[in-house]
Amino acid sequence: MAPVTPLSEAVKKCVAEAIAKAAPEIGEIDPQLRRSDRDDFQANGILGLAKKLRSDPRELAGKVAEHIALDDLITGCEVSGPGFINLTVSSSAILDRACERLADGRLGVPFAEAPGTTVIDYSQPNVAKEMHVGHLRSTVIGDALVRILEFGGERVLRQNHIGDWGTQFGMLIQYLAEHPGTDTHREQDTGAGPSMSRLNSLYRAARAEFDGDPAFADRARTRVVALQAGDKETVDTWRRIVDESKVYFDAVYDRLGVRLRDTDAVGESFYNDMLADVCADLERSEVAIRSDGALCVFFDDIKGTDGQPVPLIVRKSDGGFGYATTDLAAIRHRRDVLGADRILYVVDSRQSLHFRMVFETARRAGWIDDTLQVLHLPFGTVLGKDGKPFKTRSGETVRLMDLLDQAVDRAAAVVSEKNPDLPPDELASRAAQVGIGAVKYADLSTSRSRDYLFDVDRMVSLNGDTGVYLQYAHARIRSVLRRAPQDVTPQAHRTLALEPTERALGLALDAFGDAVRAASAAFEPHRLGAYLFDLASAFTSFYEHCPVLKAGDRQVMENRLLLCALTGDTLQLGMELLGLEAPARL
Image (cartoon, rainbow, N blue to C red; front, side, top):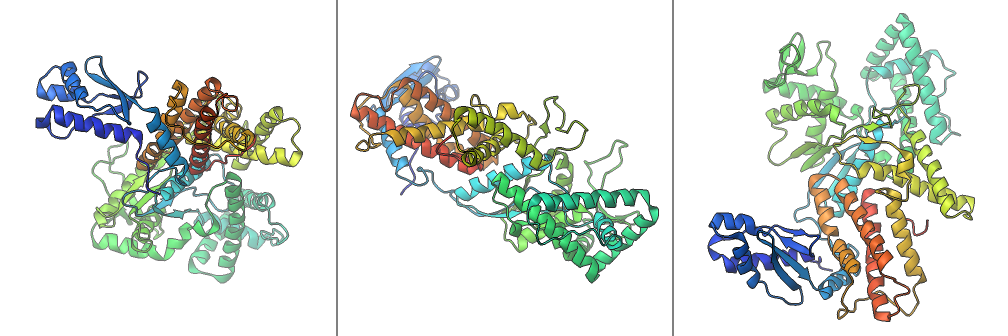
């Protein structure tokens, strides 16, 4: 089915044509059409046009209004204020758009005009360590962006840049070699709990011995050399640690309902064989120079507190490579092998300087040019109720699984209160849908760059801007549709005038595609989240003022069922794009 032209675009076109007739000498101009609390739409562009023409804006607005034909699309047009034009669209136009959208699996939203290949780097947990609250935002935001871009037709490649390489593995592997009773791989344990518990215990024990025994620390460093040299026994142990960590990562991703899978994990170790070439190319092109034995890239505008330049070190004085080298190798690989037109890094804002230096280095080397867009999408911090970074009472970072458990437990209480007779298994299922959805929506409804407070009680509330509010609105709609008489179907009766809250809901539904495009263009899922909350609020107002099943008139009921059905489908699709479940019952 062809995409549905939004009412805003159709009205904007009519106003633009009227402006061209009223002021042909000015050429094309944006009418600056907006939704209005005074009418359906308001055109504000006349003020700027009048200034260019040195004419009275209200008089010019009157001339433009004279050229706006009142027809099946626009039924009202009046000048207000200093030169605004208020516009009313017909009830039939609203209903026609609703019918067209409901009949289309994409709800009338077109694909992007020029889809390409986007690589999204997100989540990035560390092997042998539990995921904590700091991993939540990258994982949830990245997953939403994957869904939104794929919906637009983009080919999206998920890249989970896990931390699977470094000096800490020498410590872990050496500890296992000296304590053979410490088993990191048990076939009978496939759950994330036992798996990560063993790895956590291993890491703590190895770290304690590393910090407390200099001789062990020396042996651990020697083990790093053996790992880098490809020693079979060392590499086999390293692989077991990585594999067991992936079991845990996959369990977390399943719990969160995100699309990352084991095949998307491309760790730091993947780029090891590329690092020497990266450094050689940078040195050969003189992008990097030697300084105190290290290979560095310098920037005129990046200096430390002492006023001295702060370099990006691509090879250390001891010959080792750091994160910067790996990130540079990843850019080349993603461009040359994966065929990326765009690379997005969903990483917290504290890494902004690092990525600024890495991207500038890649540009100087010619690895980033006009054919490749590379962006760091920074995000803020998850805060506790005290306004500080979210920690446990003992000051430790909050484990992600504990945080999710807490949300599901609170959600179970909310669901149970609404439905006290639910069987335990059904209660558990709905509590998971609500609790996980509440956590994800709290994140995704917040501007990506802002910090936000993690408050479970507010997140699972049925009132306010919460995921539960959206899910409850959707479930209420599905209940209405289930209870509708079998011989009554959602359809439009174009001759009926719509009530104010019906009109408001119909116009809100027509703006779904605009919200999806805005979220995609800015890489900001909260724009879609804000739209869904506004839509659910419009439905609540409609539901309170316009009886559906007790409408009294069959045609009125069918019009209202049409709006209900489209609202349900729009909420469901919108929540799916954010990675939230939309249960039919709560």
